[in-house]
Length: 185
Image (tube, rainbow, N blue to C red):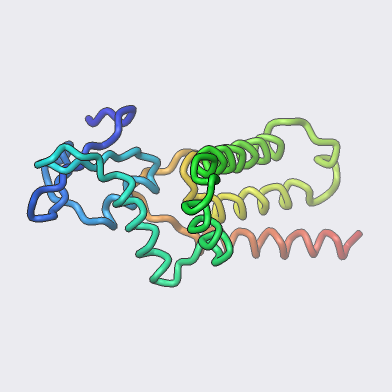
């Protein structure tokens, strides 16, 4: 079994092919993106020179997703990133971005914890449990692709396909139940 505490080493050959050293097979950029989405750190090294190419390949993955219409970065953010290279912000930007994403992960984890662990006086309100489950399903669907966010349910197999349609169906069912309870009140 692979040691997931260490970065997955990918070697780039002179032919530009990418080689996964753990599984001894060639991989694509999309495969590398999948490893990262699954929470795995990667390191991409040029076999001939020994140069670390990780940053370049991560940027290429982001660029490909953005060009496919899977926009995550608004134009003004991209513009600010470009500007940061021409100003003194270049030295501050990496720490700022790392801290921002760290705070996002922490706040998501705290939100989920507050929904599930801390006793809530609202729990006595009819329909609260259904609303809480609906929120959990929503967060699981929306945040499932963010590394570091584990969700609240039981751990899923990393190879199992996500089933957002089931979550949406559950949310609709719970919402209908909640509406019925509210109309009776």
